[in-house]
Image 1 (tube, helix red, strand yellow):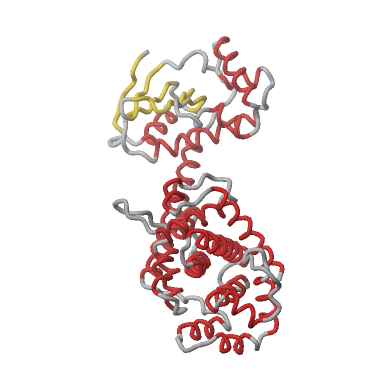
Image 2: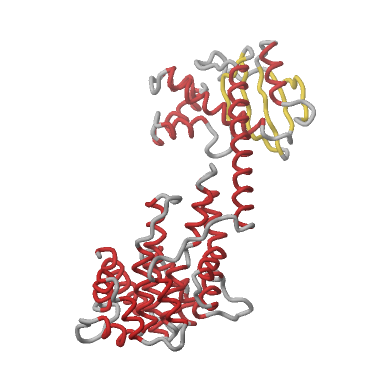
Length: 427
């Protein structure tokens, strides 16, 4: 084997080397090395690309053939073994055995070459070794790609990828800037909730004041009574009047029920209804479950309820801002995950909920520091995880222990929460 030349990619780009080989109609092997290891090799016959290989999983021709559906995994392994025994290229073996048409093989081969070229051209580091002669098993192969065309296609795709990346980065920067500068509209508290929260903050308010306010909406009264009689609240005897419901459940619990009813029917012109409904439904489930767990743990069930109900509302704001920009779903998901808590706390503040609720929403994804844990945060996280996994995942053992919760209690709270959620959705 003779070495025609070697070069560092920093001094001689790969596409120049391949075009030089093409122009001179050389038959040779072009090996790309990074960190002193061969990353890939192009087998050139009379200047055209006749074959290529790579030690990377997923980058070999066989991998592309299987992914395209042209061959099954079993057929691919058999073809590789037989071609090796016969000392012929895989492409020649596939055509000779009529396992794939020449046209289909060329299409898949072009996909592999494009992927390898993009990978190689994207990196400036490494070296190239060009050797001859071409191995006999490659000579006279059945598939050849015109080198200039293959390079052109790879560069075109790279340009599109760079443009998309640039546009994506600009979009992410714009969205992040708007979120940081609070350049967005927070959702307005629905209807009667404003008056109820104001009434609850007044120490002189009585359940008669609440009853008079709610009595103006007969549909709301009917829905409150249905929820008050659900298994979730587990009282004995039928609740047949609003006054009785307020007396039995308390004013704060009635506000929670009204909040759940109002939020479950929120609409938005900026967020697709399907996305909005998924967020609201999840929050409602977490709210009912968190409240049930709080009663089991002798924590503030009303605070747990509101914390669960409002914990993901910040996502609706992010979605409303992101609608003006084109970004990948994965990046949008990252924004939703990392920024929704702080914006949710802003919503709670705007809606005049207590500072304890604001902080619970703001830090509901935080874990304990230095062995110090917040039981309400632990409770919200357990409820959130249970709803997210349909209680199929394993709850955090330390959090369960800190709350003295059993799995049976968790399952019971989940079951009742889902029943009440379905009841609200049916109203």
